[in-house]
Image (cartoon, rainbow, N blue to C red; front, side):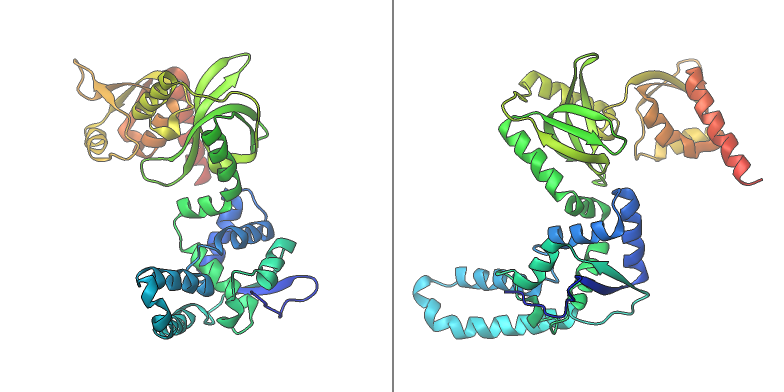
Amino acid sequence: MSQFTNINFEYKLRVPLSAYAENIIENDCVSFSRKRNTLINLIILNFYRIADCSVSLRLNEYREELKRSIPKTELKKNEGIIDTIIKGRGRELKKKYAVKIKAETNKPVTLSKKVNELLTLDPESSEELYYNDKPGLYLTALLEEYARLPYYKREEIVFKDILNVISNAIDCNYPIKLSNTNGRIFLVRPYSITSDPLSMYHYLVGISDDPTYGSKNVALRLSRIADVEIKYYQDGNITSKEADAIKNEIRKKSVQFLSSEKSEISIELTDFGLKKYRTQQHLRPSGVQDKKNPNLFHFECTETQILFYFLSFGKEAKIISPEELKKKFKEFYSESVKAYK
């Protein structure tokens, strides 16, 4: 049982962090719309069971692996050997994780009741043995490990509870009611949780049923979901025909642009812009080259995809149509110039 004792009655701890980890946590507070204290408590609750720095939990797993590799009839006489191996591995992990770091910040964290119980009453964990009964030392290791994960994995940790609700709804064919960070409400028949081609972000993919505008395929960024609720006793089934339509649309648009409407867009490229378009493949929209003008391309895709891809081209790409999109590019570049005046 975890029995850290060095926690005051207000559940406040100072947790030293490197500048790198502090910067990641600050950025994630913005990206995930969470206050610092709330975010850190979520990280602790949702990450400690799988973190490498949770030494006692990793040793328990390793012990079970060793036991499975030995015939049951041989287990008893090999218990001493297993204990010796585990102790050695424990020393290695303690040396790696239970160390003071060169800390640039040392801000206080107020622990939630659940986190406090985890650190003092968890029957499956004995981290106090490896962190010299210093809970701050353990939390430093936990947050430093979290900060070095890619964004995609950090998002998965912070939104673990929402992911679980959505997964349950998918498994049971229930629709879900969700609100995003802007307060907009969606009623969705969920199809899958997936990522963009570069595995940067999670998306909830499904069909949004609107009584006014009808059904529409959507992909909602996980980090933009504020709340989700399963609508029990309602049918959230997606037919095979609807599933095929979703998969086809993702192939054409890519998942991050699934919710956007397609437009007919024409863009004229300079010779250098043409070369850039042929070599820069990430998020590249598929276009048809004009028969009369080889520098003119016609696209049938979302305006969002064009904005994502072509804004960095600057003068090397000129929007010919539609007029509204041309106006957006012009305003963007004008505002950028003003910033340098």
